[in-house]
Image: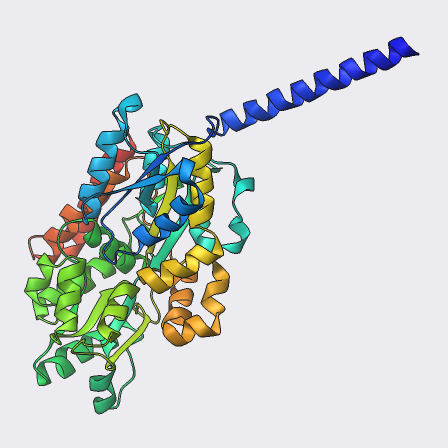
Length: 423
């Protein structure tokens, strides 16, 4: 009996060791082995200076896991380039946690730059459903949604009210008001972010999606842009510039330039992110109290936005991956997500916050934004997304500048994207 008991205790001990070993192996496969310690978080420029205080709260509670914030340029393209350069450095990489544009997740995961994450560590079922798709690649979670976004149509509600009309729901209404109401009041009609950079890719994709089309399928393996919907979308953008209700100077607009034009009272309509609505409505804004926001219009009714925002990912060369995962859980928790909205004016990923009466009183656009996010679609998913975006920018810039017809541009875009897909 004593022998059998001893053997039983030995077997139990072996099982405990084996179970621990298997659990450790599972954690390693998920890329989170490595214990705890200090971290570096890399992000594009923090335009509202909200992130420092959030990280200060973490640092006070976790002194042995102190986070150093590294701010990269405001431009998405420049920020991505600096992150990519650092990640290619391998073991010499400085960054542990990356605040990445939602559409970089596929590219970074395919390149092996970021680690897969265990779904069980994050309450993904409490997030707005569409945002989780932006954080996956080939069925695995490679990042955690942090901030979401959807494009809105900002408009001068005072001017539309004087004219006795409501906010446009279709492209036809938008064109008509931009061509008639705007010049009658000394305003330009409509603008978005039309400089050839990531913002132009977003605006072009939204036009295609709103017309019922797509650009790529099967995570970049199939080109779907050669369609009547894409030709209609490109025609809408080109016609605006040609007819003057999209001002030619808007071809040089990024986010800040377009927001400034609207805040200064020079535009009737603006496609932008919710932070522009917050800025336009703030005390001291020349258009405060005169601004409304609705979902983007489409050819025959409400259109479809691109899903914006950012995800938090762990570098493949992170020094302390487990600490990195805990930091991500902290930043995506409901308490901090509320501060992301109230301090940073950035849309949170937690679904419950969009139904909070107190937040809706402070941010009346939240129900509209929720509707837009739930109907939004990601930009074209591809491991070669950076190159895909450059191709889209070049082609759409030629269309809007009048150097190429919409039909020819769609054909050219399909050919160039097909060449990328076959690489």
